[in-house]
Image (cartoon, rainbow, N blue to C red; front, side, top):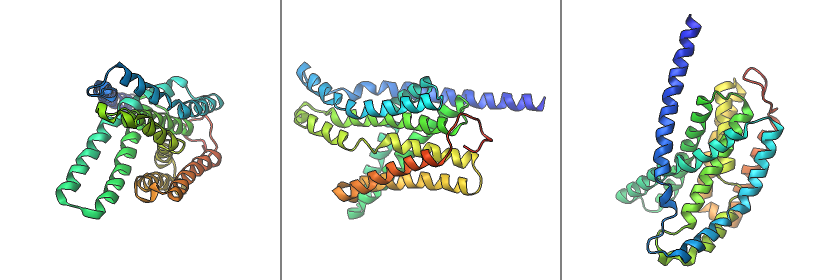
Length: 276
């Protein structure tokens, strides 16, 4: 009877998490049309913006192939990944945008001066990574996914969805007078796509799995992994990340850590209790 009561309590918690997630998803969906709205644009402008957005396929296709291969190799549900991509497109973006805008207004009000750009970069790293991780954790909790690879790939999918949302919002201008920047902005977004949100959230989700299910050194490694991602994101958005050397170091370190995690931790589909 005690076990049954505990099970009902957990199911009730999942119900409320699911309800909160659905409300968040619907609210995010309501902002989707704003991504493609260009004030004063005609059909030719929208066609140009659409063509520019198609450049995103340069990274979406290879990352999608990688995810499909990993899903097949380790028996991860493709439906789970599609759901996570959809949630990543709709859920984290509006919240992260509001948090970033609020921080910008705060920094202006306190006249932070030269430190403002560094503080803003740090805030973006914290806010975006933790919000994306929350979305991934909600999906995994509701669907009762407990394997390392499910966590890593769900994080990867949420991150890819967020990356698609962010790139569209940067490529499609708010006003028609900015249409001349559409293709250069698309090129800029694609040029940094290889080491971006898809890898960030894969690692933070893997780190959270280690924190929750690991012990001792593995749990500490999980905290370290989450901290590494936030620090990497901070450096990417800082002045250091805008230099060629800085970008190369930041991107290479992110991808190397992701490869290291995939190779070091024996990935399989067994539940908690196995040395995954």
